[in-house]
Image (cartoon, rainbow, N blue to C red):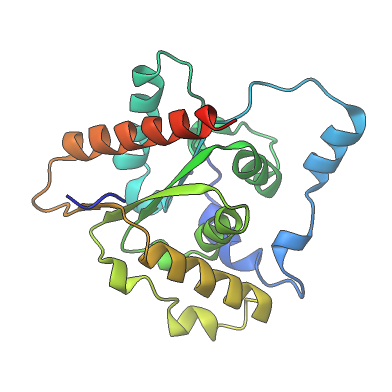
Length: 211
């Protein structure tokens, strides 16, 4: 076998609008992040795992089940970041997401049919790649060869040219990373979640042992 929103309902809309700035998002620190650093505010335990997914496809299936399984499997020791479980009303969307990416040891990227339509999902993926995070891909009803930035997205006029290149580079890396493949029409979701959780736990142990 191959290895590899309460989130605001505006997440999908923001996915396109938040990318239309003249400069790449990766270069702009969030107000929440800078404020927290400046004030030295108390922090919760850092996130261990970041779950990158398209909510419209996987929020109530593999993403949520994986989140719960990681907590159960680790006895609460592992703290996963999942947008609709880790964010509260009033949180700054970009700031909280960037925090989860910055802190995580391992990420899971769940590539589903509508994933490539979301600039926000692509921004998360690019940020994970640029931060050199270990990424465990799940090809959820899609083939790795299909991870190509859609022409309609690239030519929409909503993205800065630097973001287009970031997204393409991140997708190229994902295509050639060994991951877990799953066919929603024939696969066993419980088996997928178990395999993904075990792979993530193994990667976390490896990163911790090298410190």
